[in-house]
Image (cartoon, rainbow, N blue to C red):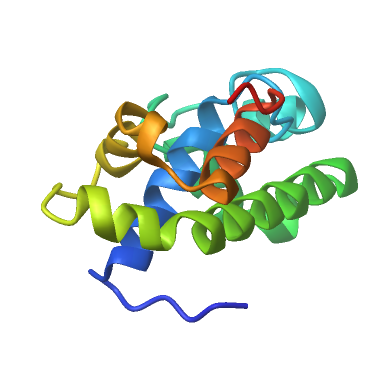
Length: 135
C-alpha cells in the first residue's frame, strides 16, 4: 500500500477520494444508512454528523466491531480509493496544486477539469462514482 505523508498531495487526494467514495451511490460502505454497513452505522456511528467523511472515519475507527459484510465493503472502498489515488495523483498535481485540501476540494477540482484529465484518472473517478466511462 502507498505510504501517505500528512499534508502531501497524496494525502489530500486520499481525503478527497474518501469523500467521493462516501458520497458515491454504489458504495455500500457509504454510511447513508443503506447497504452492507447500515446496521453498523446505526449502532456505532449514530451520533456522527453526516458529510465530510465522518461516517467513513467512524467505521474505520470501529472496524474491529463492524460486521463481516461491512468489513468487506470497507475493503472494496479502500481498493477503489487506492486506484483513484494511483490514477489521479499526477492530474491532481498538474491541475489542482494550489487547491486547499479538505471538504472534497481536490476531487471537485478534478471533476471540474474532467476534459483535461488523463484517461486513467477519468476512468478511476467514474469507477469510484459507480458509473461507466462516459468520455
